[in-house]
Image (cartoon, rainbow over all chains, first blue to last red; front, side, top):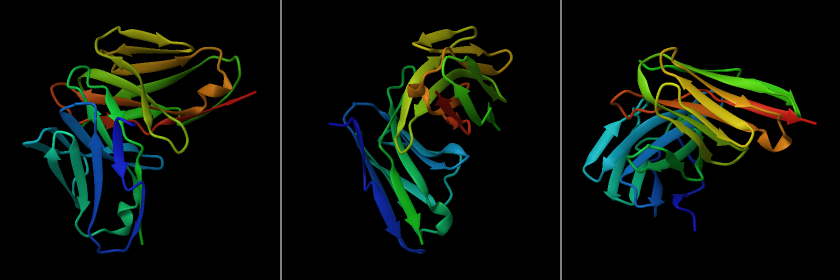
Length: 112
Length: 111
């Protein structure tokens, strides 16, 4: 089984809808991250969390919120989706040592 | 604000040739990472460089870090088709975990 899983893998939604992307991990890592990937822009950090009680904004947090329900679960919400949030979203975890990040398979989101 | 620039963004190589991808960053950092992404796939860690002068090698790939020049290189030796992918460098500012990625270098190795 994969160490970092994301659901759903693909999602189509309409402008104004609220959606949630979920991430679960079995690596036992405390640190979890949400990124979005757009063509030609690399990955940009949205939010990160170092433990259940610690949430930090990343480079592009506007329009997003997160919830760390447990060590193993980190959810990303779009409160009111807009078309420019169409992107590939990745969840990642790290162990707090060398901080190498382990990425989930990604969620492809299309906002119409 | 930390900026990370990779070049080239696109690289088409012939098999058996050598080439280097460059990653420049704009502020003090103590950690630099290289990742690989295959089309339609997730990112896979290649190297973690944690100190000035660090060099790491895996197969035909070698990464190095010069923190004074704020430069990392990923050198490809005798390229093979299996190395075709997009390569990203990522930098974490000193005492900060706001990871910043470069735009990626899309490498295509042709026979």
